[in-house]
Length: 402
Image (cartoon, rainbow, N blue to C red; front, side):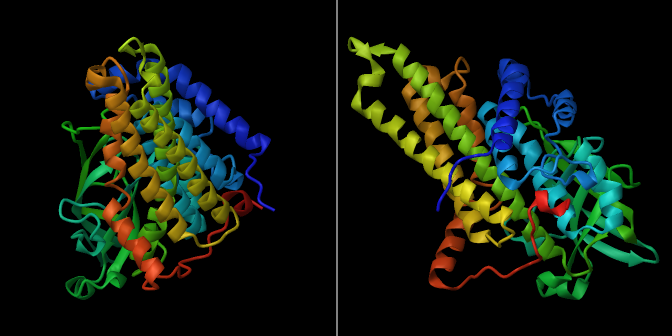
């Protein structure tokens, strides 16, 4: 039997997230976007509501909700603005869920628990000036020296780069394997902002997600304690791929919320705006664009819900997550473009939110694997060139706490 209904717990966390974001952020998000300033107080409120640790087990300071709950939070946050969902993607998805699976008990105590409570903010450090989709192209190195690793390198396009306290950083620990582009020479580390030699900065000329903090950080002879190595040496690439799957899931759910935001804005405007003696909602080509948003929203939501269900079952679902991320982000870009068209000249102004929606939609088809990367992945799955191999047992958050 197929059951698409949500539990009372699911409805409650979605409603709480929607009400908070709609009440406290939505009225001022347009100005925040214009000012291109990140409001740090939002992190405090998200922590108070338990959103930052919603899928971290209670044992480690979180709420212990499941993956569906995480997806619902992301959808509701991006309905208001993409910058809100990005916080969940990097803090809860890319970082905390990765530490939950790959981190040691000591690392969970020192880092995961404070992150779940919102006492510390976390992010993810993989992308570099010359390395994005080409992960093994990164140049950051980590040299073992006694009881520490000495890290050198620079990371770029990092969400919360100038805000986060803890960074999950990837670097080469084997120079010979680096020369051969052998990903088994990569490792993962927890780096604190307070470590000597760590510096960060903010990028100020972004085209979209202007209300969010995006930047870079550099490490010059940063000494990282050996106990901050996540997993074992050489497991960095596997850990990165695991983390990206969690991030892609949150992006898929968030992009679904953006489609809904475009749809709602378009419905409202189409009924109010009159041309040729009638509301534009009665024109067939406007109806066509609205119908596309409706079908895209339902399809995107079903795709991320399927991925969330598989995660709750502890099953590998890299293919399903990839498909959900690819479809939802491309559909959100289409919905935002059509929303601008429906609004006409006003869509090209800041008077209505659809221009912001369009600018924000572009980022998601690039990060967490470009649309092209996901197209290739889906083709490879269909052709039998790629299959899901267990990286590490991935049990749902609500079962981890038992």
